[in-house]
Image (cartoon, rainbow, N blue to C red; front, side):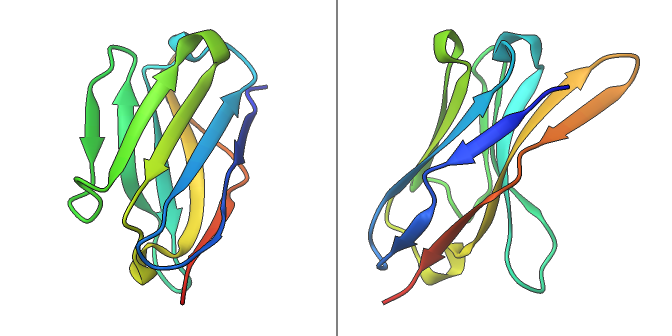
Length: 118
């Protein structure tokens, strides 16, 4: 059973920074891709950023040039550095891992709240 545990959420003022961390219970090199998604109240879950096992990254247009995703294979951790935060970044952030087994399988963390408010 794969477990993903997020940490680093909290409350910050607009323009501030937070760093989210996702720790996996097994080697992240076994996953084809890992990423972060978010869900604001009353909205659908949306992609924030992903990183493949080869290190290729992809970002939502709304976070480009502000957020950076990275991975530390030795620590089985994926990080999301969030700078210049805006009120519209407020959401629950979820860590995701994708792996092609007999079919594509998605694993999810429990989520961590990020609140941007003055």
